[in-house]
Image (cartoon, rainbow, N blue to C red; front, side, top):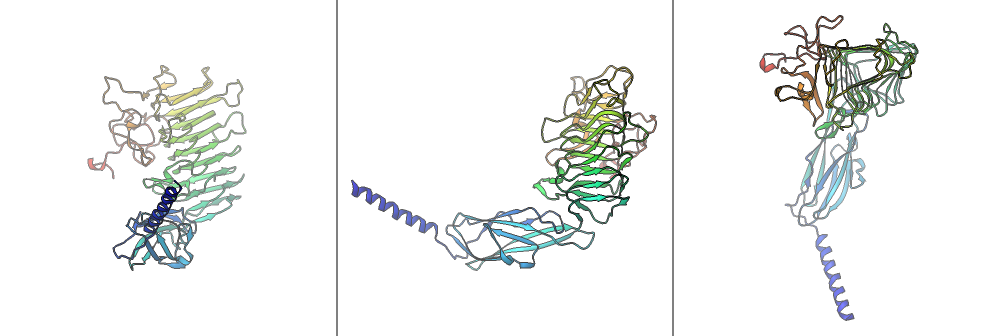
Length: 499
């Protein structure tokens, strides 16, 4: 019995040695090639001098024998803007010698890029190559590409201690936070772009003035310019940076043509120092702005005064607009709660008044004129402790509102309620169907109403103090009547409309 066991062990060892020998055999046949996961590694446009995220290239040996590689070399060598790491080994001076790839095995190559300053306001593009010289004499190549833009890089934050206007020739990349000190005013003119690193914010103790334009809005965004997935940019996802905090004692902040997106929260206005907020001296005025794709509340107003006109506030994990006391007027605004990442989201509009009977925190005024207030839910408007004794001047006037119909002629005038279709209304558009673009895969949205939407011609043009154009500068008086919300319907180009 012992002899039989020994014989079997001997045979097993011999078979193992043969198998290992066969598995570890190498060929210099000129027919053998590596197969690459990609023929080009393309980096998104980066900020110059800031390293990219890492991209991965796989080199597969799908042949019947192993392959020996004499050299793996970045063509640009030590001067290249690209770096590579092969199976955990860094390519010193861009070259590495003598590598073996067993049959049906692979190499994992990690590649990064650090672009130099472009030296101009235009983006600069770079190309290099990784060459794989095989023992059989064959050279295989993978192309590396990437681009960069210059920026003012503010590590350690940016503090504004006196009146200042930032430059517009290139964007700012801000680490930590931007702080506007009391008695200082920061002005951002058209074309200014501020890109904030993770957890950076704008803290306003003094005053913030934004003076963008339709052609060149002021842009406030995160600093990630690459893709999360092939189809999805980080810039189209929320919580890339913090947002704006208007601190107690800051008044007269005015934002015109400002695009704020992909933040953890949009704008938070802390409560004022006054028991009764002064409507003549609001904490914030927004006109023709966008607050979009936000990981918390879009616009949070705490016992302060505000005016919001021709503004889109949309797709927020928290409440799109959260009002807690104070005095507020919204004219021609689109409050759209279509946050795509989860179903557990806040309301499009959340109104709260003081519940303890005190004057502080009482909701005194909440007017919504010619607005669109909608979202995925069956009811996206929520009010808590709203005074019914006449102390609160609240009004929904010629709005498109996603809430059950309200029988209150004093506070709800000329509205259309965005409700589910009924059998006798087969062509009625509800919720997201009212708008021209809802690309939920790529998180691209356009809240312009469709021609057949009931938002069309809903607005009251005679209401005092309303603008004659929409957020994009389109006349509200060019067709049969102005539309509710911040966008006026535009006939498609193929039908003879605007390009």
